[in-house]
Length: 67
Image (cartoon, rainbow, N blue to C red; front, side, top):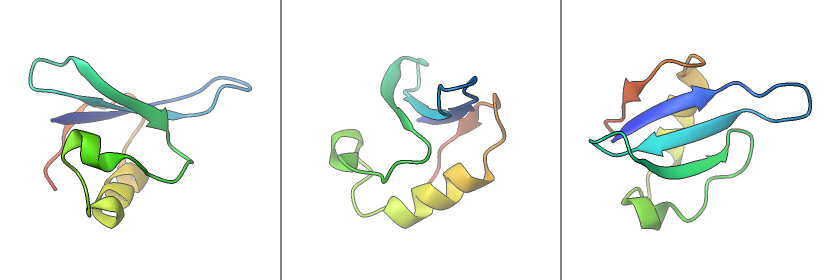
């Protein structure tokens, strides 16, 4: 799974994208909102680890998600 942080413009907030091994979009959520429904993506009980990864992401840099 891959993760990328997308910079918002003006009133559009920053977003996080989760993509599978084929780079198909599987999740899209606001970077500033609490993480929920992570069980859909196989990331249940990893909220704190994912929040730490999101905080350290640079905008526009695709990164392999390994938590």
